[in-house]
Image (cartoon, rainbow, N blue to C red):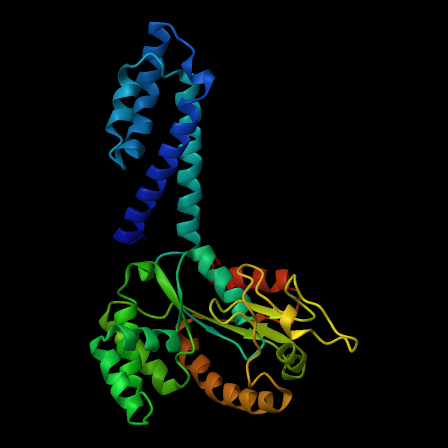
Amino acid sequence: SWTRSSLENTETMLASSAVRLAGRRATSSSVRRTLSSASRQQVVSSEKQNLLPYLAALGFAVGATQLSGHDSVTSNFLGQCTKEVEAVKESVENKFATYWPRNIMILFGPPGAGKGTHGPKIENLLNIPQLSTGDMLRAAVAAKTEVGLKAKAVMAAGGLVSDDIVVGIIRDRIKEEDCKFGFILDGFPRTKVQAMALDKMLAEEGACVTKVVELQVPDEVLEERICGRWIHKASGRSYHVKYAPPKTMKVDADGKPVKESMTDDETGEPLMQRPDDTASALVKRLQGYHGETVPILEHYKPNGVVTTVNANQKMDGVWSEVLGALSRKK
């Protein structure tokens, strides 16, 4: 079933679409053709009631008045507008039925599995933010929130930020408007203890983790992916010298990328390589990942929310499996 907020959001989307459609149609020459009084009255009587709810959703009272009285509104306009509004309505309803209500998702994957590629695509599809614990921590400190000040004090003393503080920062962040329909957690939880703390906090908010997606790639495949990876730090966009090079990339005589040519496709800003994106560092990172992640997956499996995606295939295939994991229609 839909939540109240889901229905309200749908109503707004429908109304906005109806207004755009009406504006385009109303300016066309076809809708200015004159109908006889009798035929126009018949059309208005049969179609007006179907259109008014969507126009009224945005307070489109003037448009409603025109539907009932002005000669410039024609049967072609009414009929076409009704069909298109119904199509918009059906599209939105299908999207909500497939992917909503509120998605609280954890995206797992070893370094190089494709979280930086598919995370933003999930954000765009579901219109929910991907929340990085590092970004949230820095934002809370900068905003001088209560938990941000606690975190700042701990870090200033050279200590590690506790799970309670991190959970508190997440609690504050997910109350913001962009998290209304859900969010994706990136980098948290990292341990079963953190997962249990997260579950407790969400339960207090009347929510729970609804999706846990693991992007799975064999360890032996990851070295090539990691060592060829370049990152746009500000956005998190990820590139690869072999699989997804930036448009500006140039290579030297040895076939290695020229650093100065590695720039972001959208902003033109320089790309960077992470210091730990090396073969030697990868071994330790994978050991840590497997040791931490398996217990978390086992923790959530009894809830029926864990899906494993084969990320060792072409990108379209991975995305298709991700969509299957997100869908509520099984």
